[in-house]
Amino acid sequence: MKAQSRQIFKGSCSHRVGLFGDIIHRNAWFYPSREAFIFGDQRVTFEQYNERVNSLIHALRDMGVRKGDVLGVLSWNCLEYMDVFGAAEKGGFIIAPFNPRLSLNDFEYLINDSEANTLFVGPEFADVVNTLKPSIPKVKHFISFESSLPGMKRHTDLLASYPTSEPDTEVDDEVRLFIWYTSGTTGRPRGALYTHGRFREEMMCLAREVPIGSDDKCIALMPLFHSGGIALNSYFFHQGATIVNMRFFDLKALLSAIEKEKITNLALVPTHLSAMLDLPDLESYDVSSIRRIYYAASPMPKELLVRGIEKFGLVFYQAYGQAESGPDIANLKEKEHDVLGKPLREQQRLLSCGRPALGVHVRIVDKNGTDVSAGDIGEIIAMSRHIMNEYWKKPQETKKTIVDGWLHTGDMGRYDEDGYIYIVDRKQDMIISGGEHIFPREVEEVLYQHPAVLECAVFGIPDPKWVEVVHAAVSLKKGAMATPEELIEFCKKNIARYKAPKSIEIMPEIPKGATGKILKREMKSKYWAGR
Image 1 (tube, helix red, strand yellow):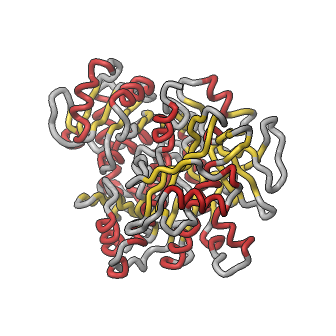
Image 2 (cartoon, rainbow, N blue to C red):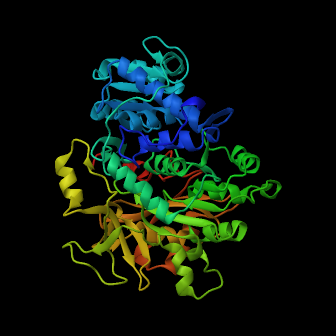
Image 3 (spheres, rainbow, N blue to C red):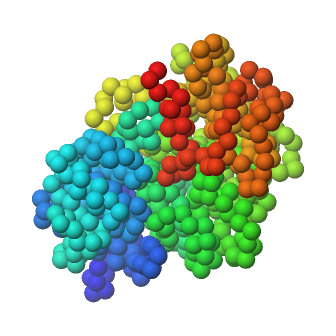
């Protein structure tokens, strides 16, 4: 977008105003020289990003990729990944990001399920994709983010070879935009499909709840294949803020970036915060620029959150959501964390995920769909204008999940008299032992109270007498000591005895996925194999 063409901004004529393609064009006009993205040594302005996106759209069209075609991405975080998001948002394509931590069989399934005809490949996955080529016949175009590889076009060559002029693509609310694959906790991952209109509503919800401006600099420590990662990065971009991103989590690199770039907004998962607070030389870094810390993806132990508040102050903002709902079903705002030293009822608020976000209706219902009373446990269901449209190619599962407009989250929870929502557990994770219902999270909260416990995961394992019994996997803090027997006795003193673990495995580290979520299903599967 050259200086001589800058007259009055009229929006992108081919996009409905407010859709993301229009935002890319608008930001390039309003903030041409302001940095949009910082990836290591790569620094790109809003104008440069708009031009990169335009060139990629022209290249894809020249290759025969059309509006509505699916662009798959298999890569770790990088600037080129953001180019593909922009091309989908502005060019009318659908983007399907894939989790790089999955297996070869999973990659084959996801690529075929998405019906991608174009696959963008990070350098670490070139060999994987070459192995897969015979089994992913619908993919016609392979584009490498870095090296020139046989049978693959090079992303940078495409950007250099095509014009930066504005493409002409009609995009409205109903055009499909994202396929966000779920984590697959109940089987094969399912694709949550979002249109441009739904995604715009997501951005509007965040804008109402989390005001940021063009003077902000933000880091979201989430992978871009994850719905929370791209939603937050997109929101930061939407508001004209600068986004600093990292390929992988590196604690000292993160702290150096916060200090150097004067980061104001930081999004993380509990394991990231724990690593920061446990760093002996944390005080040697200047983190005073931080005004807000978002946390999500997995429950935050109360003790860890209290330590965070004591260090950083009232800057914490919790968001509860999922791939099917977007990032903000409910939230616990910064001022709602101001409970230290207050009555226990108010302190308990730190265990909640907050209250429903603006524009989101939330109910907690029993198995018959009847609303439960305050304090009673039921399934959390939500209705808003930004929940997913449907599961990709799965109409029957869509009908089971979205009933009369209500998204059934699969999360069990309760609410208190002040309207704060407490997630009890995933519906399918509930343990039934001797006819008694036990929620693993309740047991985990007790284990986290033990001074030696760093992380834990509780799940049911088979038992000939009780059908299922409670089992826990535990990792200990550095230098701490505790035996399984000691931890079991601790639980029996702090919870109903039938809920206490019957067995505990001490592990060096609890396995986690790319988003920081504990891989409970994988740990559980070895006990249930063949049953």
